[in-house]
Image 1 (tube, rainbow, N blue to C red):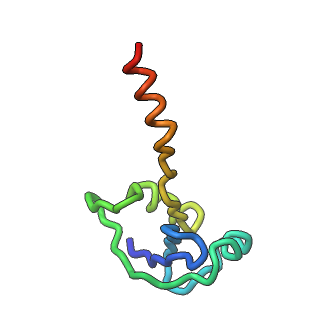
Image 2: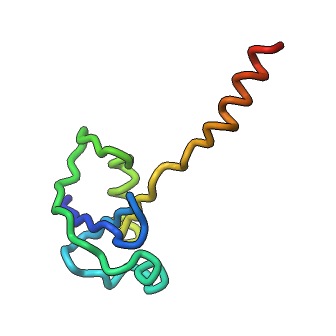
Length: 93
């Protein structure tokens, strides 16, 4: 299965995977307006066993088949202060 990947000019580390290059017909208009004008990154072959940096290849394939697109969001930002406080409280007990 081939897919085309686009990055968002508005949202850092946000990517949109679609089945056919430049065919955004299955992507909801509300998503596209939030995403911004998609900037083409590459065409990628989604084969079994291939690793993607921040997405599960099986979820990407399933989403492309069922809804026609996959939206990859950046991982949540770690709150270092909360992490420090939690570690400190564990070490004080």
